[in-house]
Length: 305
Image (cartoon, rainbow, N blue to C red; front, side, top):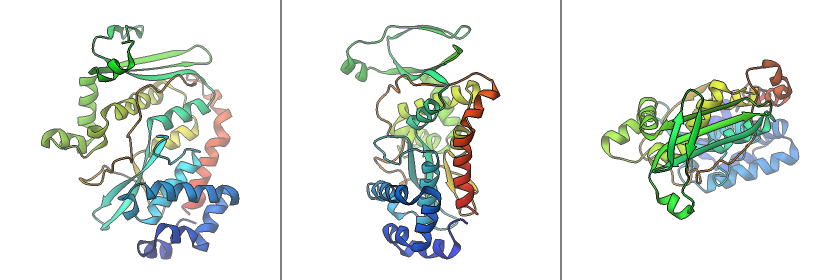
């Protein structure tokens, strides 16, 4: 059963701590997460919400739904870890604020590494003066990285590079110029397009362009050429969604004033580092991931019925 209608209606008048202490809600959490893990889960939600004033104004049901999805993917809601975020969004139709699930770029990395298919996985901002050549035919890149970290941090970003190598040796790489990334952001984010037009900084693209660019590069390269476990597919399908009481998803962007410092996509600096990732286009390879994916789906199904 999902968050019951009676609980959902009353939760606006109830603090999150009190809401999560409700026997019916605790029983739901414990049946999905488990007793011992349920205590840890509740503590992590409260900590994440207490650190974000706007998130405290969201409906308790939407916060719990987003957090349960993150838990089903075995990701942490801690903003410092950057794996996923619960982001405030104003639902004008309902007249309330709801929490949106947003996958962080470090969450993409965690899910990919967990598959055991990747030998290497990396995403990197390329600074001015570093790029010597990128050949899109053989995907070979030649760069001379700035050695001094402080100097490199100050340098202007001119593009983004992402690559992965499977354990079987298959490799894939891509490079986007910053201009291409900006065009992509304007095309697919109405909020960022409005920011560019008005000179405002309400969206994550405006607040942390590099962090959103890393996420975009990983999403592009993994979804197009990587083998994705069911767990990864669930994460991609749920990214940027508000999870409703019936389990359906609404894909939304932030309204002005809804973005909070320290909430989402304040991705810490650049290098995702080398991780592990994935196998080529061989469906049989995915069978090892089936139990984890089934678990993630089962959590959603059991909660939203």
